Length: 333
Ligand code: FES
Image (tube, rainbow, N blue to C red):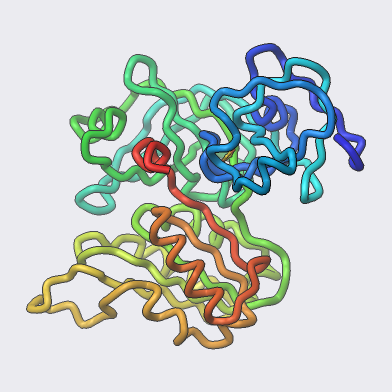
């Protein structure tokens, strides 16, 4: 790797990104399916083939400048590449077996899945894993919903029912207690960054999981930073996490607020809280132009929040996003 002197060994049939992550190299990535452009690198020397053309996830300028996508790259020779950002070491991706230990409804269409693993898995709060269940569906990605715990090997995920989704349809159809599951991870770059700036979190639906995990896993220093969490949901029955955020508020040293905002609650209902879109409230957040912002959830919501934050004066380097891509969104992109 030019300028960094790092060497990544890539086995035949593996992508450059898969190999990097398995070796604990924190190669930037997000969707892993060639649409977000996060894993781009500049190919300085060598030959590659691609699963799908990098042109799909890059601008024309980037592609013509020699950028390619690591998640789509199969090296055919030794490569020399350059990244725009410095690489960091991270927890290597591993595969660990386990069993479904509980399956509790958080809302009508979100389940908290607890998997008891055969051994603990190491990850940063905010990262995600792939769940694999033999014979059910291809691997599905879910953020860890609770921070890692030194003394036990249970991991939690918030799984939203996707209409027509093979995996979630199977999960919601019956109790799956005792079902064998393989957890592969950790993946992703999302997580609390250092600094003293106020923290603004904007989540939609099960995008609350990595926000909760990140705040619950925050260091004592980070707990001195004020936090505003805006949670976008459609109706009152889509709200969850009130108890968890109340516990966080009590344990947090600075102010921490958690505000659900409902976009489709019937006008005649008894709901007295906020209505509209999360983006309607961004300008009202104190010190917004000095904050660090963390966005999680469906890509349209994350994109809209990002635009509103930029308009409010935040610079792009203070905005961190985790877009919950599913297959339909990847296909659309
Ligand atoms: Fe490669 Fe998104 S991680 S394009």
